[in-house]
Image (cartoon, rainbow, N blue to C red; front, side, top):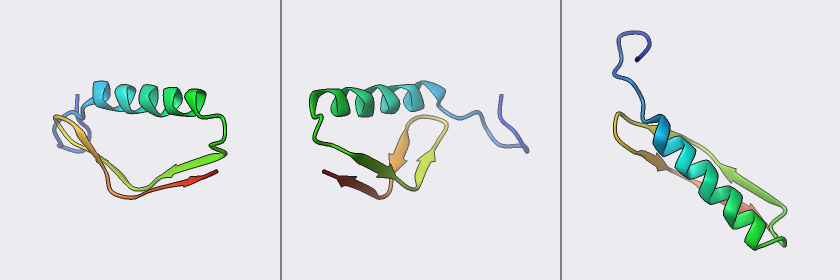
Length: 55
């Protein structure tokens, strides 16, 4: 259910992004920090606009 009159967001896409980022960090322990900002979540899908990694 959406808020403020908006359509519901794609919660499954958020879960998938978090799982992929988690797997990336587990497979690459040299990653010290990941910054995804902003992340736009839509009715179907999402978009990471900018990303930064610190090794």
